[in-house]
Image (tube, rainbow, N blue to C red; front, side):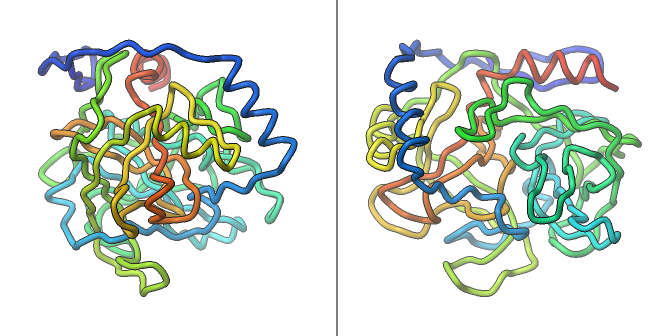
Length: 297
């Protein structure tokens, strides 16, 4: 089943056959220990305050009205720029990646505080248009791990409700514990450069990619000591470089048949065919998202 979160209820839409997977906790613990010991570097996508959909093509917010921009004022000077992305859940809620909202050693500011953020909706452009909203509360998942990026999801409560319409719409997220088979075509949406090292376009971009077999992704990231947990999945292109999300694209949606199945979390470099992008698996967090959005209004 796939669910769209309504203001007071859930509406059932369609069915996806779930597939059970076993969690090898000992193996994950060994990999986590290896990461700590050897200090492998994972290039997390939120480290630079800009967004890229590597290998993307232009599109419009009319095609993806569920998308929201998260604008950060890093120094508290009221100079906002796009830092992460998110998905509209209700007229008062947006979901994004928890790792966007952390304490920054560079600035000495705590970005879990709403005062550093604004949300832009309804615009195809990264720097203009649409409507800006203040954030009332930021709720990262209580079990988010800032070292391994497990449980990398957050719910944002807006200070004022969105005006839903043609360019601002609620996203649809998966029912709990549903799975997507490998090699399924998905769409990543965001703003930024269409090629590595190239100029950063202002217009919204999209890129097509396929889901990657879970064990294949675990094996590949194992070579650099990184952990791919059961709450994550991978997508990209294993045949050629250049199709991926990248720095600052965090929290943006990976869409499968019109349904948001993942949020951009992390990766090793950008557009590397051997290390596909890693996404938060939303089906593991649907219950928590709904409960949180129901509790905080």
